[in-house]
Each structure stands twice: as structure tokens, then as C-alpha cells.
Image (tube, rainbow, N blue to C red; front, side, top):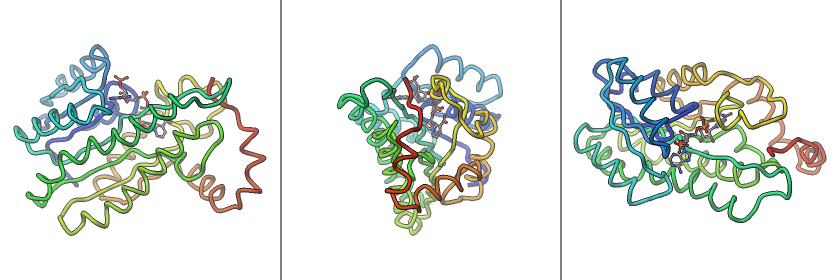
Length: 253
Ligand SMILES: NC(=O)c1ccc[n+]([C@@H]2O[C@H](COP(=O)([O-])OP(=O)(O)OC[C@H]3O[C@@H](n4cnc5c(N)ncnc54)[C@H](OP(=O)(O)O)[C@@H]3O)[C@@H](O)[C@H]2O)c1
């Protein structure tokens, strides 16, 4: 969509979500921004207001289905939502004893249920208006399971495939769907990675790429291209060939 006026961004209190909020902030724009940390969220909202945007802050856990529905339908009733970017997500360290059951369940609750909680409450209104765009934050980690992040990779794969299918399903209702698949982006999430991150990019640059892709209603916004090529190859090769290599990859502590 070229000029969305009302944009909801979940996980806007830092990183890519913060950069997207600032990229869209301007006069005539209403932003619905969510996160769990009230201080960080208020700081981002303040910077967006300084740029001329109206901002509705929501200190809401994306995994809380009822709270998300109440927050989203409230915004939509006041200013119909043109674009929702379901961005909130977490990863977890698996370095010592591997991933625990609690970690895995929490990652799915936020990265997958949280994405559905961000989309479903808006769909019927978007359908009725025959206008709207849905952007789902997946990852290049969703093309091949990496031993250092089993639930993270699986949650992002599910989001990616759900979005690809939803795109075809919602097209007849005039609703666009895009799946965002970044490589490494500098943020609070990657700041904790002690290992080298090839082609690491700044969140501002990532936000610019994402915004351009959303303006063109691209089905998949994957970047940077060398990482896209690398994961494509990893996914295409037989697991038996790539498993030994991936087992040696460093893990998040
Ligand atoms: N950085 C990368 O290299 C990279 C690559 C591919 C995909 N991604 C994806 O991009 C998205 C943003 O990540 P980031 O890199 O920008 O990391 P980040 O700086 O840690 O940002 C994550 C955002 O999600 C919010 N969040 C986390 N759990 C939440 C919950 N339960 N409810 C509501 N908000 C929640 C955080 O806010 P609070 O802390 O205030 O809750 C924060 O605003 C994630 O989905 C991530 O998986 C990142």
C-alpha cells in the first residue's frame, strides 16, 4: 500500500519495530504501537509524536489474545487500520543445555500465537472495507532449522508459510499480505549474539527495505540478498549434507 494513514506495529519499543515506527511517523499518520516495556515504548512514541504522528500506545503482551483483540479493535473503531505489522518476537539462548520446554512454548506463544493475535481481530473490518495490508515478521531463519534455535526457526517457518497462504486467500477481499524475512539486523535481540553475524545491517536500513517492499505489496520481503541465497542453498541441500556443518554453528548463550 502506497500511503497507509493508520499503521499498527507490534513490538515497537525497540529494534526493527522502533525503526519502522519512526520511518512511518509524520503529519497525518496515526500509529498504534505496542510492547511490554512502558518506558521504552513511551520514548519511541514521543519521538514519533515529535515527527508529527498521532500515537496510540499499547502496553500489551502479544501473547494475550483478549488484550490484543481489545486494543486492536479499539484503534480500528477510532481510525480504521490500513496496515498492521505483526513484528513482536523473541529468541532465546540455547547455549548451555539446549532449549527448555518453557523456552520453546514461550517462543511459540509470542512469535506465532502473538502474530495471529495481531491479525485476526482486524480481518473482519478490513474485509468489510475491502482495504488493508497485513505484514508478518518471519525471518531467514524460517527456511531451515538451525540447532541453536529450534523453536525460533520453527515459529518463523510457520509464520512465513501461514502468510504465504493467507496472501492468496485474502487477495479476493482486497487485502494484501507480505511476509518479511530479514537476515541479521542490529537490535536488542542480536546484541546478545557473541558470534559473527554476516551482512549485519542497521535497523533503520532494514526498516527502509521493509517499507519499500510493503509499498509494492511484495509477497516476500527477504534481505540482504547474499543471506537469502545462502539460506536457499541450505534449504535445498539434503539435510544429511548440511547437518554436520550446522551442528558446529555457535549458539546464543
Ligand atoms: N534482529 C534480527 O536479526 C532479526 C532477523 C529476523 C527477524 N527478526 C524479527 O524481528 C522482530 C523484531 O525483533 P528485533 O530484532 O527488533 O528485536 P528487539 O529489539 O528485541 O525487539 C523485539 C520487540 O518485540 C517486543 N516484544 C517481545 N515480546 C513481546 C510480547 N510478548 N508482547 C509484545 N511485544 C513483545 C519487544 O518489546 P518489549 O520488550 O517492550 O516487550 C520489542 O519491541 C522479531 O519478530 C524478530 O524475530 C529479527
